[in-house]
Image 1: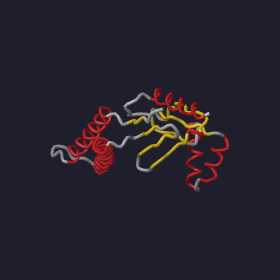
Image 2: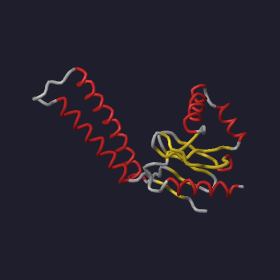
Image 3: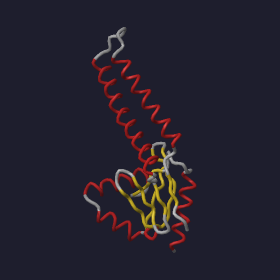
Image 4: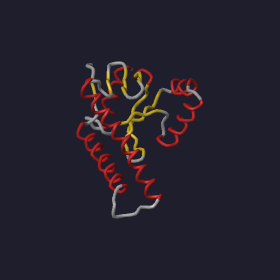
Length: 172
């Protein structure tokens, strides 16, 4: 099987970046509107929006530029594993996985990973205290200890999930 590279969707990310810019502009216009006298509460909300959407916009821009100029894919699917290149390098070996399945968490599609029972126990035991808390929280919210984002990509979530399950079956 050949190596498959999955990137973020340029159109979807540019739309998110434009949305961030709109909220930044609204925050700035609220702060510097000479015709309205806004309260301290309004000032705090405006600065919060500017900072939050400013940081989000910079992150989106960084992701777009990083993928486009370096050619580094967000996901690389090989015969043996799925490699996620985000802020931290994350690898899922298909030999350790029982199946992948789609989950919706707060309106976003996540591909949940159902590890083989012994591997799931091992991952939980090897995790730090914070890691164990995170894994328990993930199990309550998404029904699994680990998952990967499947939104904003240049491939549909179901197609990606099916592709990953094909690779898992080829390991058996």
